[in-house]
Image (cartoon, rainbow over all chains, first blue to last red; front, side):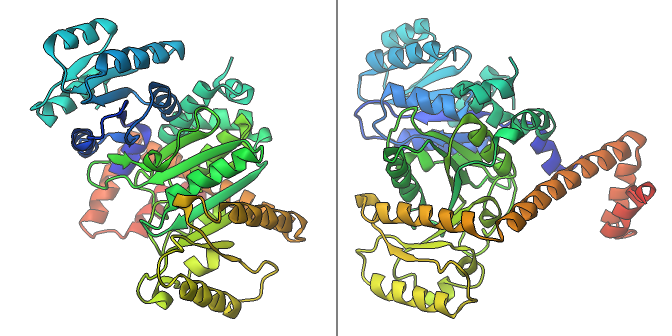
Length: 140
Length: 308
């Protein structure tokens, strides 16, 4: 089988990178988006200042495997639970939720209890994020 | 309930899943399409094409808002290129979209190696959105400039977006792009040179072959929502003209022919390749071609000789 045909029959991992809330810093989100793309994934970037409702609606329409939330505003304990609740309301529990940004350790623990699969702080290697994403979705 | 039935019932999640299926597994998708096909082909498909950075996404977003306000059910398909090296893609068209909640269903499609400015799944994705109930579909192509003429085959109305001052205008309006446009939009029309660009475009269109529909050249500033209503009007006018066009029936047959030819090509390739892989001849033939012992067309012929 040729490479194009092989690719056709498989389904690339689809990831939505969302920036909920008011902070306007999306360098980290863009770096991660680029790294995941370079790892062969299809990455949907939503842009800044999205509400949890907008992020979940986009995740639904784009049928993504993973939602990555980038939050630097400190509002993660409000925004992340809102996204998770809305995902559940749409029966999208199987979507893997990860969070990146500046998150204190005790808050990261709290987020994991809510169902967040990973919290990536500053200095995380993009390779690690790629590896984790593949492992958590179970596809290359 | 089958996935196709759920799409017909208007289930957004089912639509999203069906779109994934037509993108990734053409074989499984055949079943869904067979189920929904009677409910497709309605409404208007508007293609939006143009070079990168001319404002296609913003224009698509504003047109979506405009048609929503006019009571249309709007769907958006936005195609972005996949990397030829990794197969990955960065789908960024949502950045330009205003949040319209669940009123507008938008799907980003990666081109996945398909040339011509669209994704291979495009016709099926359009059919799914139509079966779901969308009657105005905006189809945004990859920004390329001169070759993404595929859009014409799938869209009822093709909008070509340009901006003023793209250097040598004659160069920018080369063959192809000038011929596929049913409506031309000069976006960012507050920039210097907009009048000249519009004038030159109009002149070139007048020089072209005489058609029942002379494509209008419209000014817009999509970012500021200027000129959008006029573009929407032109889309509806073009749609009316098409519907009363005596050649309409002929065009429908041409479209059907294209779809059947594509399906036939896909099915025959699948059959011949999978058979040759099973009996082991596939790799031998590829090797022979790679070593220049056999030419590609001769190889293909050898693989399907028994079909004669």
